[in-house]
Amino acid sequence: MRVIAIANQKGGCGKTTTAINLSACLAEKGYKILLIDMDPQSHASIGLGIEVYKLKKSMYEVLIQPEVGFQDIIRKTEIPGLEIAPATIMLSGAEIDLANVIGRENVLKECVQGLPYQYDYAIIDCPPSLSLLTVNALTAADELLVPVHTQYFPLEGVKQLLKTIDIVKKRLNHKLRVLGILPTLFDRRTNLSKDVLDGIRDYFRDKVFNTVINNNIKLAEAPSAGKPIILYDAGATGARDYRSLTKEVIVREKEIGS
Ligand SMILES: Nc1ncnc2c1ncn2[C@@H]1O[C@H](COP(=O)(O)OP(=O)(O)OP(=O)(O)O)[C@@H](O)[C@H]1O
Ligand SMILES: [Mg+2]
Image (cartoon, rainbow, N blue to C red; front, side, top):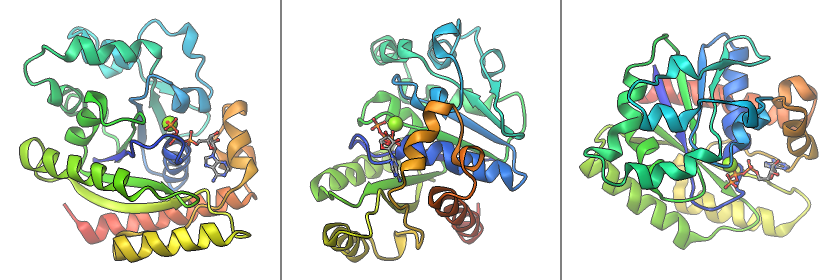
């Protein structure tokens, strides 16, 4: 199993949209996928049709209560082969509850190692912060995918993220690698988007995926229907873009090896 964390502390850059749709497109290709929602906002869970307010147990209990495991919370989705470990707002309390736990950065990793079922990929959706939840995701991950908004590229923010990755690599997870930088919310009509994309490619070079995720209203609509784009509108630009990303992820995985 490969574990891919989708992280960037900047809000609204397409992490959750990427987590949902990369997971769905990998499942469409026949892989067994677990999407782990590590964001108290629960957007990945809601976007896959989970009624989070009804949940009695979710990622919070998995992380905090030793007697609760993934098997107690994992749900199937409309996409065969795609399952989700949902989060609720409760997860916001985990930061405090974990603060005094010995090995607090390793909790998710240990839970993932104890997964009851063999998945091909676990995809982790991170919150927009460099908090303990994100550090847990980076510690559990083999690879990191960083979505970057093409209408605004705050280099300082990305440098901060890279610094955190370096610290996690040195102290907690030597094998963590950057799988790729993904330009998102690209607007072909604006020079701003093109300039920012050039800036991202200049800075990150071959780490940047060839696939660019275009701004596509269908991608924004799909979560309210509780569906990934390939079910909501399989012909949309967003479906094409995420299928293309999925192919690249599979190729890069093979190049990186294990
Ligand atoms: N390619 C796209 N085209 C149009 N809308 C998009 C696209 N990608 C994301 N969005 C919309 O932009 C908003 C932010 O996207 P998303 O929730 O994926 O970002 P995020 O990084 O997970 O945000 P947060 O940091 O709050 O977790 C959402 O309303 C989403 O539907
Ligand atoms: Mg999100």
